[in-house]
Length: 81
Image (cartoon, rainbow, N blue to C red; front, side):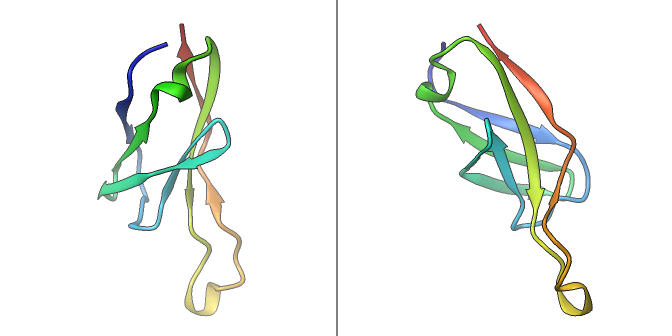
């Protein structure tokens, strides 16, 4: 467990509508750059020990690609002790 904190996610291809998912739940996400996002993680999110999956979801396509589904990044586990 811990107090609330801001999680920084580094990667590539992020857009303003990207969302960080913590344990399959979207969290308040701030777009920093196309290679960095931050997300607010609450104390309740880290109250139980274990591996928590984290991934980023980019929105679906636009324009002629509007029928494309949203894209998820690779998943990594965050260990809560």
